Image 1: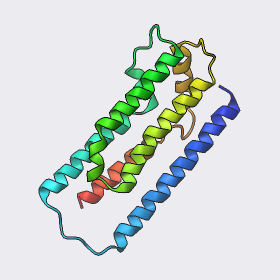
Image 2: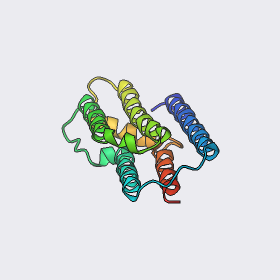
Image 3: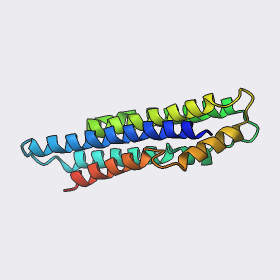
Length: 170
């Protein structure tokens, strides 16, 4: 993978991370300015915490490294692996769509951006491969990409989920 290609992805990832952090800070400031709401029911709190648990699992399972570790690539082309990885991310996301009603808009936005970013990365890395490339070639390039600083925003999303859970348990 070329250095300019990696720098391009690092720049995009850094911008996405910065936007996410700013959104979380704004959301946090808004919640501090709003008057204290009455305590929610224990059942409602439990549902919110369960949603955060499921979204944490989604964030973990959607990391590029974890996707590759769960995928059998023997005999696949890069195009086949591209299709398989993006479909897996979409299915995991769709499975968790209902959880958005239990979390803040900022957290759900972070989950959606995580999905979109990982699909975007897979698309662009695949686009730089020759049409006859093997799945192993794509897998190697994705793993190389994940080793670059700020390559995946899953850590930031996981921090946002943890922040939301701690806020609920106060």
